[in-house]
Image (spheres, rainbow, N blue to C red):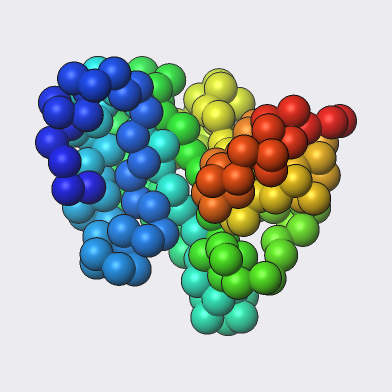
Length: 176
């Protein structure tokens, strides 16, 4: 968010996070700016990982789907069907990140299915099925097997657990 795309690309990065929950909450990144970043990443020949998800308050108000649908619509505005081949979506329920609260695998899978349905409506079924949708709400060695066994979850966006080599290795070597 604070480094030029050309600089990031020059050191070999292929994927860039856009809309990460910490940037949204701590840096005030809004959907207009996130959309500009997604487009800039694509124009630069890299691949955005668009992070979407609801806060605890939004979860408690039962507006998770509304929030995620709005984020997808705004953050992908002007992104073409062809460009979607390079976009990854990461669903990160903000309330489950570093709080000790857990988004269960079944609940996460339902949200991934909803995201896929929203993408089908925005683009088409082919784009929806081809888009990689990762889960990013405090993935742990204890939760990864259940998450990765779900049909709609295509991978994990690992945060804090990646700082511990043993935990990260276990996550990378999940078991179905």
